[in-house]
Length: 88
Image (cartoon, rainbow, N blue to C red; front, side, top):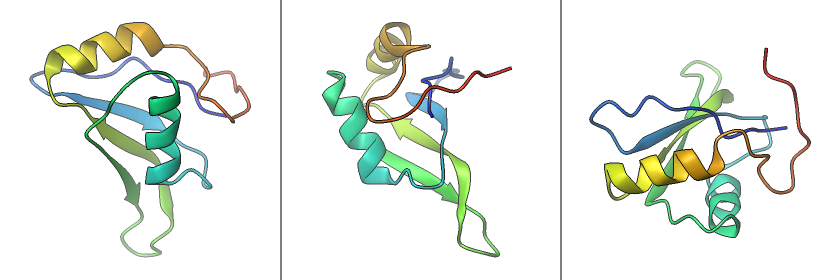
């Protein structure tokens, strides 16, 4: 249930993604790799009090150009092995 969303790329090579609770760093990394992208790392953000996933992550690329290319290629695409959900 995850779409690649349009990202804030101001002087950054990061994607911001909304996640389902079961999606881990390795899940997101693997999904990007299956779509032909090579992120440097993935950081799933967690609630600092409960340790539970906060529902979003950052995907870091080597360069701004790589992040921008991935954004244009993947924005609005469904990540493999997930169910689509409509973002309002």
